[in-house]
Amino acid sequence: MGRLEELRINAYLSEVARGYSNNAFVAQHLFPEITSEKEKIDIFEFNKEAFNLYDTERAIRANSNVISPQGFKKHTTTLAEHDLSYPIDYREEQEAEKVKLQLHATNVVTEGLKLKLEKQCADLAQDANK
Image 1 (cartoon, rainbow, N blue to C red):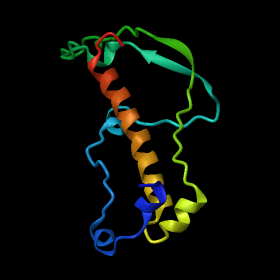
Image 2: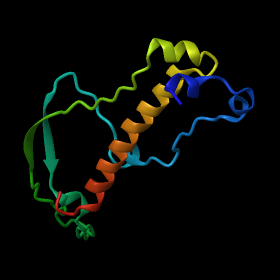
Image 3: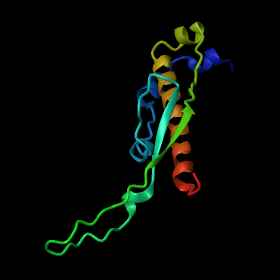
Image 4: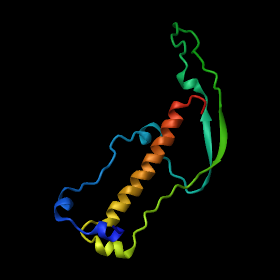
C-alpha cells in the first residue's frame, strides 16, 4: 500500500484521532532558557558559596560576621542550533485534506525537539561531574 492510500480519509478513525503531547517535561524548570542574539556567549560560573552554612549569630556591639567572596569563573562557549524537518509532498497534503497533515508535522517536530532537550537536561542533571 502506497503512502497516498494510507492518507485517504476514514471517517470513523478521523473522529477519534488525537494528537499526543507530553505534559511531563521538566527541563525548562531545572534549566531555565535564556535568549541570546549571538552564538558565542560568556557564561559566568559562581562558586558554591550560596550553599555554605555561615555563623550568623552576633553579640551586642560585636563586629559583623563577614563572608570572604570567592569570585567566579568565566567560560566562553558557542551555542548550537537544533533542527528537525517533516517533509510533506503536495500530493500527500491534497490527499489528506481533512487530516491537517501540516499541524501533525508541526506537533511531531516540536515534540521531537522538546524530547531531545529533555534528555540532554536529564543527563546533565544526573551527572555530578558536569
